[in-house]
Length: 279
Image 1 (cartoon, rainbow, N blue to C red):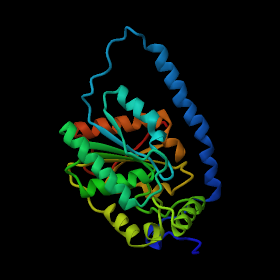
Image 2 (image 1 turned 90 degrees about the vertical axis):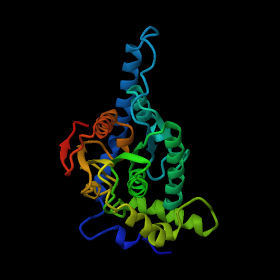
Image 3 (image 1 turned 45 degrees about the horizontal axis):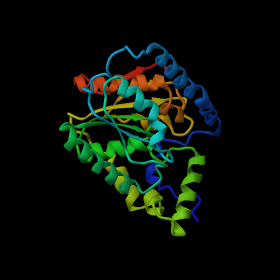
Image 4 (image 1 turned 60 degrees about the horizontal axis):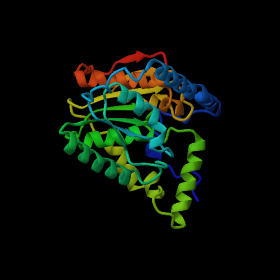
């Protein structure tokens, strides 16, 4: 078996895999997740049975797409925070792990979007973590009639192959599983063939001017090359979370909320900009 099944076009020369030492940043995950728990407890203490009804769901509907090897549950905390601010949130429909063919997953998400748009009679904003953000980028380019904005978190859109070598081992495992007949997992063409090429090319297509795009990234990212997250089409927001922690750190969730509001207000800058957050 090829020790690196990931196609070379997914790792352009100007990008690189994060070094082993960078993985140490992922140890921040425990602290980042604990902030979510602390904020949840703090919010529970401030709420009372007499606080009134739930907030009006007048903000844009939001579809949440998890990252590679992650399921919808990983974005549950973010979903709760968005709902508290008036958003209707929807799961992508990946209950266990995002590890299937990217084209198949994108097709499933597109069908999900069609159903939400038909029900709510308005376009949807997508928030995607890591691979979920890359899927969102491709779908938004193909179906701007369904998508009004996207927010990516640690998504290496410019170089999907610029990830830590430990992630390649997971990919190798999935390819091996597909070769022995396991269905629903990535195979060789998904990571190094026509399927991979089609997904990558789609994620590079220019977005229409009425589809807002914010890319959240972190120089502390221990999984992907943070530079690969800086899509020229996006407004860039830097946080200080780990790669995995972006999904659970409430300070990153605050930045997601800010981006969604900016998208709705139509004030996203036409040219890419940079803002350093406190997360």
